[in-house]
Length: 217
Image (cartoon, rainbow, N blue to C red; front, side, top):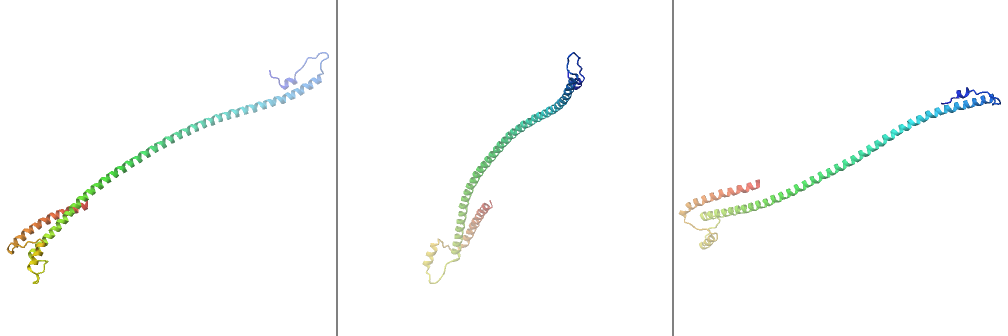
């Protein structure tokens, strides 16, 4: 049972012989009641403060738990981000290595292809050089034959001076490999040689066309 200040003030005691002084007892009880009232109010105030403090402590505890959970989530997120970044960097590095290897392989293949093409061009050029040299030699040979024909039939390129002996002329003609034929056979010989020249020219034109085609390629 809780005692209030009013209970102390209204408390009555039995009167006995040789008891305490009523005035002193009442006065003491009044002081006790006053002090009790003060203590009671202070106790209520302290209870309210304690309740408020407890509420704040509970609030702070909740905040602490929230902060701790947030820190745990942040730590987990950081670890996850670090793991993802590591995986992504490994993937990027792997892709870069694969791309670099593909570039190296393609470059190696291109080098082989270019080398093969160069060797093929060397062979083509060797063939062309042989063919062109043969063509030029045939042209020179044809030109020499034509020159011989004209010299033989029309005496072009030689002086017919009275001071030059027939022996000297014969020697010069023999040096050039020219055969003197009778005049009556010269026309038929010319026709035959013209046909041969036309045939050689036709063949030379084909060779010239092949040479042109080589440069076009």
